[in-house]
Figure (cartoon, rainbow, N blue to C red):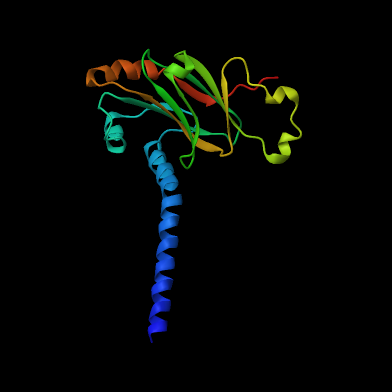
Length: 187
């Protein structure tokens, strides 16, 4: 009888460990994708938008209310996407995430040295594609930066902090000049 009970205790413990590990490894990515997609449900792919203050305070309650978040939900299934950034002078951060929250690229105002730039988002070549690339295909365009993603969907998130709520409008106005769209095909 004790052996039978011990078997069920060990089985329950192993199952609990498996469930816990699964939740720790996979739930954050799914929650990230779900929450950001819910925010952008009425915004088409490859379109830049400023996160409304009410939505921002629900998702990022720890940030001051004057902080501005700009997002681009990108979709690379039909080709590269160009993000033309127009950022206000001062502190800012751009982070590009895969669909499930893996950080693909991050740059800050200090690292970039500029407040206006282009960033091309494209699919990373597969293992077999690497062997068929031309030398020109591996070079980064001189007009900006290039980020390669193994995931065809994701988010580019701009963060512009402001301690004063009154600054939000002017920061939003400058950041709203940013665009996100299908990259022009070069010949």
